[in-house]
Image (cartoon, rainbow, N blue to C red; front, side, top):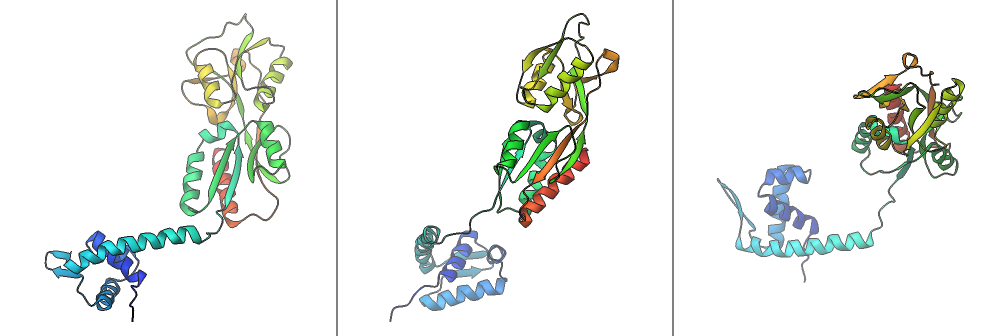
Length: 286
């Protein structure tokens, strides 16, 4: 009658042989140390050979244990390979997020870190896009969660956070009061660009767009290079940027609203938690 090796016993034996410790094996396999010893004894009874030699200085494999170790590695490798090919795992949940460029620089990493620690099996697809793309992407179903900007009332399906816009310049350069105001702005369609140009026009100030960038990094570089001034949310401030205002003859900028929007269908617990973490982060900076 042919005898068959028990895969679970082989895996216990391989772990003991690899770690050289019954204690470490019990921790890795989440079993008590007596249970590990009992499994090794069952395997030894199965092959009718001693496999592990214990001593006061530690443990070692017997000659038969060395032989079985080679077979155990091959058998378990083939078993694991077969299971990976044949067993269909549940589809991984994916959360698709659309955010404006500047938000990724204001504590977003902490949101991702906490969510990943709580939900290690969830994938997040992050798309950084301009304001119009965020709106259309959310409407078209490309995003499950999105942060969009508005001047007016917040969207009914979302939660709004007020953001103050400020004029900023390189802290080391002075503006020529007789020349058109040099501007470093985002491309057409951006809410911040629109707010800046409307405020300047209402104040009767001449302006000249000298640098355009779709990213916050590009805008900051243009301002720090002394090319011109820009309009950014208060959260983006930091040295050596300098805030400008009425003292420099500039008009006030309107507040904007950052809207947190999640799809209307009942969200999964993971998406609910992700949205909550985003909400907490935005409220702290509101």
